[in-house]
Image (tube, rainbow, N blue to C red; front, side, top):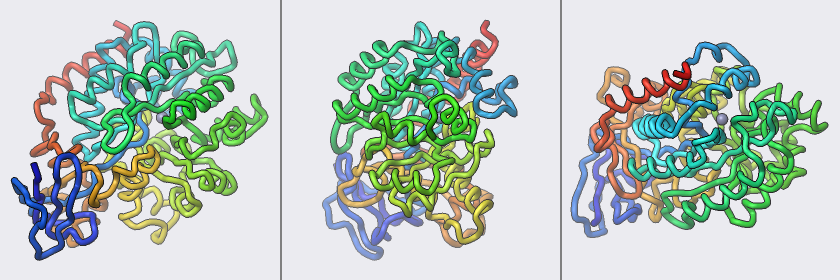
Length: 446
Ligand code: ZN
């Protein structure tokens, strides 16, 4: 089956004024303005009301945290105190609540233009050992493309770390499960719908040995590596006091300065550190709203890109930013750079690039992130017939500057999975009610 998505209101691709042709799961032709498709097609979709973007890619999230949004005891706290307030609550999450949290976060992402979602799950209390398997099942059910990071924590309070013992696991358990998950779920090559990355949580919750062995295993299994790094000044102080090195120097010693790694946040890298990351082609998941809410600081995405670092965009966990809306995050990234670095710092196109091509680079997926022949047919279509857009001139700038917040249609791998602003086959109201009730149970412990 070939589908011609024709006459778009606007499209983020060169020479595709009259749309694109999709065959199976790929884009096969860009149709210039005023011309007809050359590829034989079976059906057409009139995109005259739509702005067509490559599907957005979210490079860092913690789906389970939707269960602790705007949680009173964690409000107004800096990262370390925020985490200490939340770890015991997260330790209560059961498989049913976790499944609902995953489904809800994935749905939020889809409806905001996301076609590939990364999650970083690192809390494995007793009973939740199969968390990543649950996420894989939910992704398949929705048709969302995923890279699921098998997170881990083994450095509890008694070992000098931040988390309580109940949410940590020992190294052997973690590594055995990483190996199991890669064998079960990691698909390779063009069009892969499910991938697994190895992702010890952070320098202050993971031992040096687990960091080192995770990097070695990622090399051996040829999968990607992910962790939180350079998020706050407190992290720098912790690493200098307890380890005697800055976070990136510490991880470099442990085998993490590699092109297969991408780091969440990267707010506090020095220029020299950015150069070292750029030299190996590592990536950074920029999380502007999370950084603003926790008061972590301001990332330098343009400087990093200039030095060769891959810059992707991410909403981060819902307890740190309290929303999983990726197209809104594009606007947040734009506003944060303008507010702190001036009018010339970025154009509206820069954060769109981070959320598409840059994010694809972070996760090592050259088959995603652009509307071009041969790439996967992952698309996000937005309508502009809302009050907030009325009066626009440039349709693509309008998405960012007027504040698009909801996609009208989503295609993943050539299949429509969102139509008319709704996820096909999903009762969103019922999901919200079940999730709110699960969140109450987790927060109150009853
Ligand atoms: Zn995070």
